[in-house]
Length: 395
Image (cartoon, rainbow, N blue to C red; front, side, top):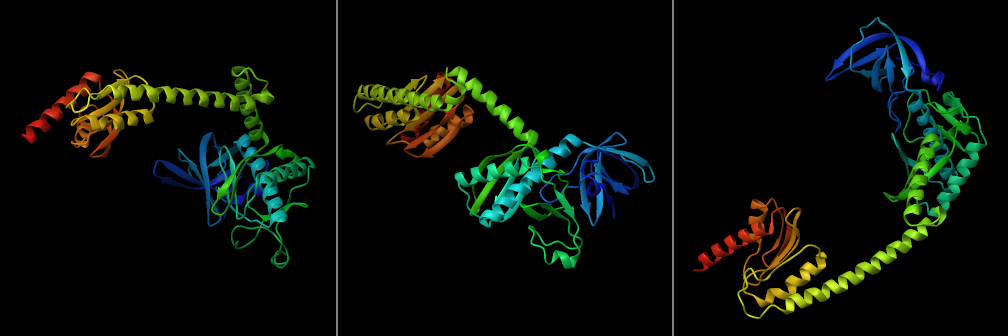
């Protein structure tokens, strides 16, 4: 059994230990110490990182009470080691985890929902609750959580005897064998937990719910605490300021300016589609009835809405016993296309362009769409070849 120093002191940053075993793994080594301050992965929280005698520790995991430290170099058994935790990362996880206990405790007490899933990632914390929470409820939960954080309550750690544990109401996601470690935030939460926590809730700093969505019949809540919440705020503040400058709006009115800009762009897009439609109708209207028009039915444009491409083909396909098509793009960047025919299987042309011009696309015998990376001349050459082969086969 490895002596776990992080249970005695969550704030420990350096420690002395002795190597008991060193096992080579594929591309790494697993070091076992007589004692450690490295918290191993577990309970939704990733492992601490740091150093042993200056050698990086990239992971730590526990099995049967033994903590295995992953390194890229061996350290021989019997070697004394100085361990160092990457404490900035450890403290951030402590802030997040204690903040999660506050949120989960509030949700459980107010609504009766259980936290059935928890992940403390490198960027964000997610909590899965087995019941619905709406936006107003989440806003109230967030405000109450910050009130609790700022009240600076003592985070209490205890190891109750079995007879006392049986009388205790506490949260736990799994059945726990052996000694149970209880983390209590007075008036808020009592939970079985093995992870390091801050000593006082004031050390959490701000608790910010940044997202919530329906998930498996309940609610997945995303949260940031402390320095992570500060970083998120600074990022969003910087973005808002940039938007306000671009749109010539005060920061607190930037959302309204974005909505107004979106409405104006949609209006312009609608007008553009309207005039494109008139243009397509005029182009299709010029096509004479009854001609074979194998190549004459092709329209090449630099910019055209996808719906207008299909409209052109639909309007023109009945005027030819050959191919109707619309290509949008240029020789440098390639073309998007829609092809149609009432007499030929246009999938053959699409397949040839896919093969010869690094294209992709497909569809039904009467209509296909896709894209190619060739030039206009290359496209026409492929089509002429396929149509010539088609005429030969018909003869």
